Image 1 (cartoon, rainbow, N blue to C red):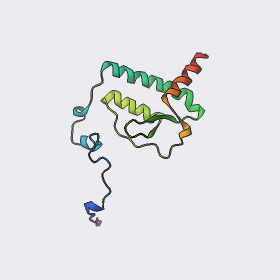
Image 2: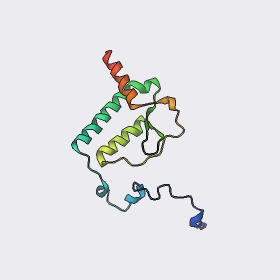
Image 3: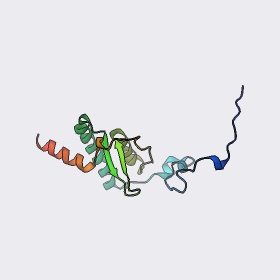
Image 4: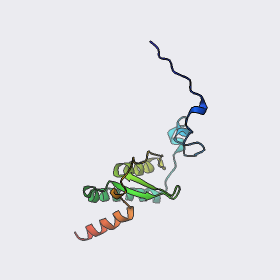
Length: 132
C-alpha cells in the first residue's frame, strides 16, 4: 500500500532560519568537506589546544558542584549562549579539526544559575589549585 502525501505550497512553509546566512550549514552539503575548511595558524591551534586542556580542568573542578557548563556573551546577537561541557568540548575539537565551529542547537531552557563564565572558571581553578 502506498501513502498519499499532500502537497504543501511554498508560502505555507516556515521561513528558512538560515536565509542569507553565509554560514548556512546546508551550503556545504554538495561541497567536499575539505574545500570549506579554514586553516588555523599555529598560534590559534595552540590556543584551542590550551582551551581544551583548561576546559577539562574546569569541568573536573566544577561539574561535581552542580555547574553544567559555560555561559558566553555573544557579540553577534547580544544574547547569552549556554554551553554544556560536552557541547563546548565538541565545538572546540571541531574548531581544531575544521578551522571553524558549525552552528548547533542551543541549550533547551537552561538554568542560568547552573552556568558560569570562562573567567569564573579560570579564577576558581587558580584559587583551588594554588591552595594545593
